[in-house]
Structures are given as C-alpha cells and as structure tokens.
Length: 158
Image 1 (tube, one colour):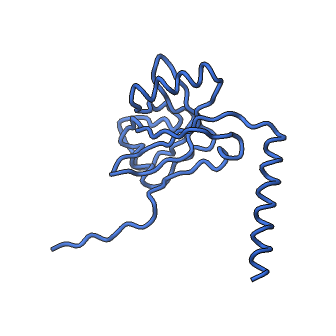
Image 2: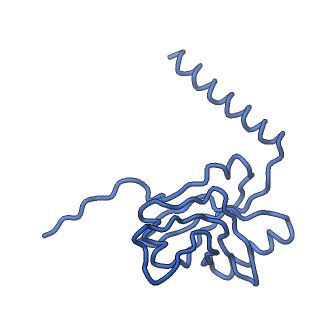
C-alpha cells in the first residue's frame, strides 16, 4: 500500500495584496481559468503575478487581462508563449449576468484577489470592488495603526 504525503498549506498560488489597499471589496466570486499547458506548468512553479491585473467583460464573457505568467525555459518548442495574453474566466451565466449588471449600473470594478488550487484545478477569486479615494486610504491606515497599537497595549498589560 502506497501512502501519499499530505500537502501542507491552503493551496494559494498568488495573492493580490494591493487589492485591499486600493479598493473597497464587496462580493467575492470564484472563477475557473481557460489556460494553455505551458501556463499550468508555470503556475505550478509559482511564476505568476496578478497584482496589476483586472477583469474586463467583453461580449458577455469575462477575461483576465495583464496577468503575468512567466513561461518556463523548457515550456514548449512549437508555440511562442505570450506571458500577458488575455485569459477567459469561466463563470456560471447567472454570476456573469450579476457581474455585468454591477459593472454597468453601479460603476464597480472587477479585480482578481487570489489564485488558488481547488481539487486539481486553478481557480481565481474575483472581487467586485469600488476604488478608494486617498482620504479613504488614510483613514484605513489610521484604523489599522490604532488596532495594532491596541493589541500592543493589551499584550503589555498581561
């Protein structure tokens, strides 16, 4: 009997840290991605960046734009890998209609917040977001500083 080693971690591939700083994120949606073989290999190697990427809706379909997947040097000999190509997001029609309505009516933005593994498939977490103004960012920073200071005070009083 062969015993498989347990995997550690939560399966997270990439996380968009700037998203929480630059946007007020509301609803979160899970989407699959239509990827090529070399992209999956590169993502397995951890060579993906979603910090500057965004989701755009075109002709009733969602696409991940400007996500950078660095091709491995041994990726392929017969195709030319494009690291910044547009990748289709796979969503249910109901979810897609909800996102289209929010973007068109409410002026929301769709941003990827995380990329992770789920049952052997690569999933993208999409956040329905509104941009923060500079005063909102300052208030959020002030609040987090206060929370940090409060924790320090509670810890020192023990």
